[in-house]
Length: 138
Image (cartoon, rainbow, N blue to C red; front, side, top):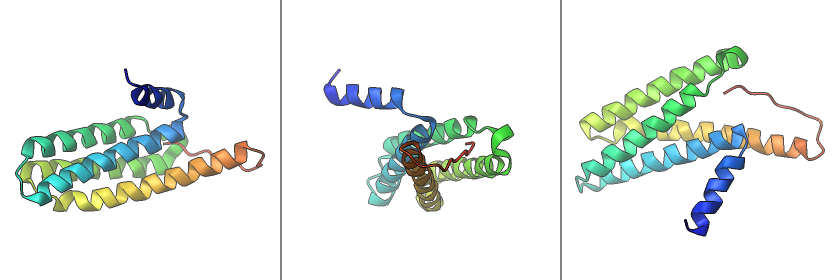
């Protein structure tokens, strides 16, 4: 195993829940970007489109499975509804080989990723001497 892969594996194994969620969003966005790029290029590399969309769907399904409805209540329910919508749009894009259904999904995933990143930054700042705490279930 090369040193970069070892570093990545160690980073993932030692990451907290919030950081893992950010990493999942990053990868889902990356896969959607690949699918959009391949669809919009006109090269008809549908095998690559299919692989990228399926990978994004797997990540979104993992995010759905990680929701804690007892702690998260309405937030978890709303995220679950969004994740269902995301997977529906990804499936439509894959079936129709059209990037239009997934462009808004990509934008919403980026917004959610930014929110989680901000939460993580707040957690990092408070754990280094601050007094505020944030408890978000999801």
